[in-house]
Every structure is written in structure tokens, then in C-alpha cells.
Length: 413
Ligand SMILES: Cc1ncc(COP(=O)(O)O)c(C=O)c1O
Image (cartoon, rainbow, N blue to C red; front, side, top):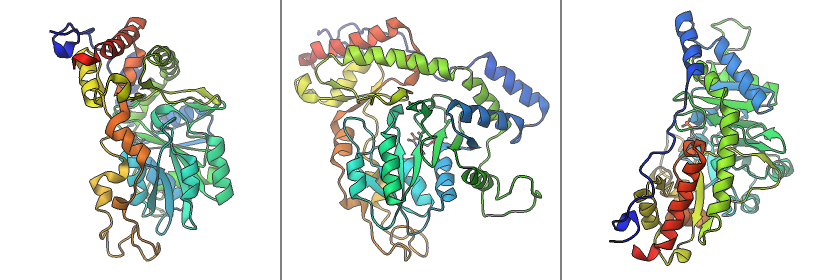
């Protein structure tokens, strides 16, 4: 019998960490208010939530919608991106960042990520700009903002639109302004796993009134505010949020700042303590980051510092000690079947990938993104989830104890 729980020892912890979602009287009160009012549809509460979310991120306008995937599609459509256009996207992200580009009939061009930040590698991005490139879509991965000064400078130089997929970064700030409000348009998700949630939901931020009006119209069947109900000015859809969702989100907003600060405090403690263990490497935070949301709590695992112990065994050992962990995405986005098989027809015109408007051909099976591939295959580890970071000092000490223990007794596995 060994010391590790995996080899028959006593686990460090049997108690679960803080679970998600966290909710209380605030959500109940607002939800009941809406429920009893009989006004469940796209009204006062949606408006109140949009204003409050925009103000929290120091954005001028917010347009809510039904989820974070659709929010990206609406942003791209608002910016006029479609057939024949290329959009730069990171190779290490959730599928929606790239699938939304396909849904907009444009071509995602994958850019490898920087292993120091897990965000898009901007040197690589610049090399991939062509006369077809219309937008750069960055993800502030796990809540860590990308260098937005540089993103905006690249966009200005090459006349590109900037879309921020801020689906991990409610409240993250770059030089005092909210992520999602730093480019042309920024999009968020309120799906169940997210740091504020109504089960599903999304929102788009912008400082541009014309974009906000157009995004609103796309979200609401092509209507224009103040115009007759059955007048439709563009081909939009129904992507609206409900009053019931907005009520829950208003409740969630009441503790967003407190939660942000708590997660940040706990994550900083963990970064400092776990960072002392050889083989545990954290993404680097730029000095211009003035507040940092933590959505995924992630680290890079260096197998050679753990006596060659494969990442999957390391994860198994953490779980056995009572710390939930996973290796995250199985592959970079472009290695998913849906992208590998995209080269064949998609509709009569074969748009977007071999579309007459595009005039080029893309085959995602032929591209290689070495950093994203290494992260997926051997280095990336996501610990617990963001609500774990709302826990007590003792919870955080247990996490440190667990990782130290696995490092110490690595030879037992
Ligand atoms: C980076 C990123 N973008 C977009 C989305 C899509 O959000 P939703 O699930 O609300 O459609 C997610 C969801 O996990 C995400 O992680």
C-alpha cells in the first residue's frame, strides 16, 4: 500500500468543493416578480440587465441574446462579415468561436496560441493576414485578457474588425476597461457553467451605436426600435433573452464583483503556492491587466518534472485525492471531425470553404498548430471549476497539499 490515494493511501479530501450555481434570495425575488407580473417577454428586466452589464464593463451599449454562440454570429453579421471573408481565430478554444464563423458563411483561419498566455499568438496572426482577412476574433482564454493594445494596433494597420469572444471573462479588465468592450464588439455567454448564469443566455457589448442598433435588429426579427411592429428592415432572427432569464442574471450580478475578487484572491494564493512545485506552470498575467476573471483554473503540466508520469495518470492521482481535474479540450478546434470534414459541400455553392466568393480552398486536415496540439495532448490541466475558487482558505490549502503530495510520491504510480 502506498501513500497516494491511487495506490491505497488515505485521500487528502473527501469533502466536495463549492458547487455551482450559487444563487439566493436576489434571484428568487426578481424571478417571482417577473413570474407574477405576467410580463415574461423581452421588457424592463432585460433592459435593466443590459444597462447594468454594460456599465460594469464600461461599455456604452449592450444587446442581450439567447446564448454565447449566437452572440458571436450576431456580432459577425452586424460587422458585415460573410461569404468570401476570412476571420482569424485561436486554435485553442471552445468550438463556438470557430463554428460561429462558419455559420456566418465566412472562413475561420486558425492561429496557434502562445504557450505563455494560452491566448492567440499575435506574431503568428499577423503572418496569416491576407487580402481576404476582415476580422480578428480573440478569446480572453480562461479569463486572462490578450494584449488588446496590440490586437487593436494590428487591426488598425490591416483594416480589420475586432471581435472579442469574452465568454470566459465577465469583469476582466485591461487598463481599467472591461474585456468585451475593448474592440468593435465583444460577446459573452451565461450558460450554466459560466461565472454568471441563467442556464443559457448571451450578450454583446459595443461602444458603437450603429453596431448596437443593427445587432438589436438582427436579434429581434429585423425590427427597428420605434418602428411598426410588423415592419422588418433586415433578415434577422429571434435570438431574444426572456424576462425570466434577465431576472436571474440581475440576481447573479449582485454578487459578480464580490465573486470576482474572491476568485482572484484564491487563485493568486494558489498560483504562488503551486507555482513553487517543479513542473507546474501558470499563464503569465500582463501588468496592464487591472482585474482578472477566473473561469477555468488551468496550469501546464511538465511531465519530465514528474519523473515522466503521463498527464492522464497525474489527473487520476489528483482526482483520487479529492481534487476534480481534467485535460480540457481533446484536440485543437480544427482537429474536430466537423472541421476535418468541412472541405466537402455545404450547400449548393459550397460556401464558405470552396465558395465562388472565396476563390481559395482550405483543408483543415493539412494544418498544424504545434502549441495547441501539445496543450491538448500532454500539458493542459484544468483544476476543478471556477466555483472551487469561491472556497475557504482551508479548501485552497487542501488543493496545494494534494498537488504537492502527488509530486512527492510520483514514483508510486
Ligand atoms: C470561448 C467560448 N466561446 C463561446 C462559447 C459559447 O457560449 P454558449 O454555450 O452560451 O453558446 C463558449 C461556451 O462554453 C466558450 O467557452
